[in-house]
Length: 94
Image (cartoon, rainbow, N blue to C red; front, side):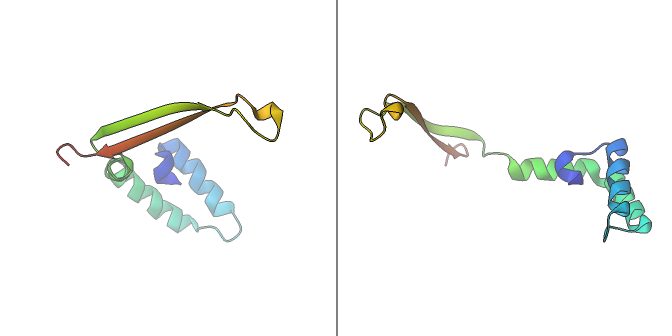
């Protein structure tokens, strides 16, 4: 939760305080260790998460179309547009 929200120090303190008050939560000593670790390694953790979740370097191909339903059992669904998008991602040169 801390890393995905990229919490600043105020958010971190509020989050850890809530965790210590929770039934079965963490202790005050554990909260202190987590806070110290986050303060020292926040930038590296954030960069690592971004690099893992980022798409590859480029969009290789993209196809799209819009379909209209012309015949259905229920007439209220006729002429309802449906967009279909296909994207192919990849690194340059691959």
